[in-house]
Image (cartoon, rainbow, N blue to C red; front, side):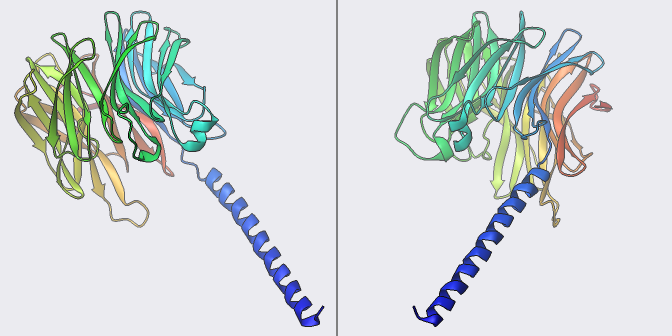
Length: 399
């Protein structure tokens, strides 16, 4: 063989080996970098006040593999942990809502049930019933199109009503009409009794529900920037759906009834990068009455609310701010406000204590308001936070 050709082949072989070595070391470095830079988080998405304390639902990744694990946590009257229980089946998961029932607690959320879902980053909707010690009594999962979740739950005499979503993986398009936003009924043993879906497309979701005057009202999102509110009978038959244009990409996130009317919360789209926090009022037939907005620089939204003994609406939300920093583009401040039953603003305040403050739920607790959420700390980690407000919206305690 020609000596020049041999030298050329030898040179090519050496270059290929060098490239291979570089790639191997790069992959090792990337793997180490990712593991060493994993962001720790512990978040609370929902809470329910119980006797001598409260129960919360959320997730954390406090494990060697940094999987997100769904959890419920019981706190005593001093806001100290009585117990914390992780749902350790599957891979990543989270609980989004929890309620107390007669003999325990029921939580809903989503999780990667098996290795196939884990590899596809798809999840199954999940409902779990715990006893008063936090041990699992019943559980069930729900899957229609490949990526599903339950977001909220209410208790009724003979079972539970839950809302959520089932869509195609990776938001892909398909022809099935069995997806979209879901309203599902379970009995007390978590056996599926009926299910009803809306939309059947790739994006519809129900975020919350309320039972009023023997009807079920659900709220969520349909197409991009379209909030929806639906009315069902107690057997899951759809009576009416109303679309509100335009919201942000989350749509309507919370619903309740006040003085015979239906109130929803969310955000009103103004322009790209800007939205106003929104409360909207409908009658029980879903006829629009009025709305009230809180607007400041950037994007604002009302995530959740409750009604106090005076029929005032106590609302929480978040404000996204462009920090124009080389490291952190956005940060979030919490919002808390009080409105009367006619949506007239009484007071709205901004909570800005950490780089990021996310408010997720609010309840009356020991004659005050307790707000749950999570905040940033130290090197890009997130921790659960509870803030106790007086009835005058003064901060009394932060945990």
